[in-house]
Amino acid sequence: LNTLTAYRNIVGDMGKLASALSLLGWDQQTHMPAKGVAIRSQVTGKLSKMLFEFLVSAELGAYLAELRNADGLSELERASVRRVGKDHDRNRAIPAELIEEQSIAQSQAQTAWVAARQASDFAAFQPHLEKMVGYARKFAEYYGYEEHPYDALLEDYEPGMTCRKLKAIIEPLRAELVPFLRRLMEKGTRPDTSLLDGTFDAETQRRLCRRALEVIRYDFEAGDLADVAHPFTTTIGPGDVRITNRYLEAQLLSSLFGALHEGGHALYNQGMPEELYALGLARGASNGIHESQSRMIENQVGRSLQFWTFFQPVLAEFFPQFKKAKANDLCAAANVVSPSLIRVEADEVTYNFHIMVRFEIEAGLLDGSIDVADLPRLWNDAMKRYLGVVPPNDAQGVLQDVHWSMGYFGYFPSYMLGNLYAAQMFRTLRKEIPTLDASIQAGNFEPLLGWLREKVHRHGGAYEPQELMRRITGHELDGSHFVSYVTEKYGAIYKL
Ligand code: ZN
Image (cartoon, rainbow, N blue to C red; front, side):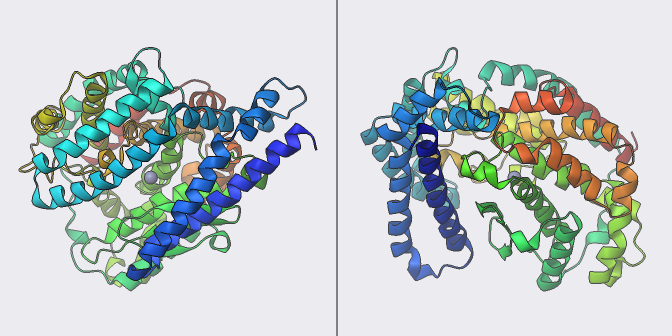
């Protein structure tokens, strides 16, 4: 048995465990009865431990050491050794006792966060958050970094990204978009959304979303759609990539854009060849690149006039009150900009500001220039600077996201980067397929999907994000594409 075969066996076994965990996780969110939680947490705990032990095993370490210097590996095999090797190194860097300690603190922090948010009581969450920040800072020291401790954590979500690079991306974005938002609000004409008023039967919405997913070429023979409170997509394995969604009777478009968003994530994994799964590469190039696939389908495609020209009669099949609606009006109503308090409900223009607020705070927490106790005040100050709104309480402010209670520091920037990657890729896509608008307008999503399959999906996690962007667009991430996309689109919709 040679080393490569032994390596592939161990990575294959890890993939099978991960697949079982994904299925258990999906079931837990969608179908598991409440009384099943005790045994389920024992099972997932056991399987997670087995997976972790495979990952940090001396056996895997020895294969990696040998293969890192070996000749004759294919390009994909080398990419696998690089990525699995990085996971191995990072997980071995943290002492086992510290991981266990952190995971206990994490479940306490999450419980405390739920209660604190309900009571809008930051002080009750503060000691837990201080602990989670403490662990994040320790982890950063163990992982190592050159310039800023935040860099060590970003690496998990966005390989190659650093605090300095993020600042260089954010600075010009903020300089352009803050005054643009002010102009939109002061001088623009807000689209009329009254045609979306009403109550929309949930079951009909569910069927509409299935149709929308078929339209974008989501493969139901390699997937499934289930109901949940907080939509997500999960990959069980090749041929099994599942979506979840929720249906609010007073908000028709919420489920539709939810379906398009999760559908975009799912197309990415459905487009990864089986070979990638066997090598531990069936994942996004980064969280940000994964988010670019969902954002592109949701926003660049789903919130375009071309899409609505095709989709208005489809919508009217399900909800006949839209028989006479104009595509123009529907599209405008789907693109209302309003500076709000809540990140997850933010529109394309204001979304990134929510991330900038969190980035400033996270970087400060990690380098010690910000104290946890000051967060409510700093949060509200930053919201005012970026969005011009101030939360009336901490539940709608600093306590709104689950991420920090879970110790996920460095995660938020991926959401913003997803928007920026999407704008840059879409620009290239339109140049390379001049008939794109016409085909979307005709309801033909094959050219779009074909391009994404070829340029993005089939590579899975084989390239780091900036390398992938160079291959697709000819250069690394450049936020100015997002600025021109947003100012052109919303300048027109708001008749500036
Ligand atoms: Zn997403």
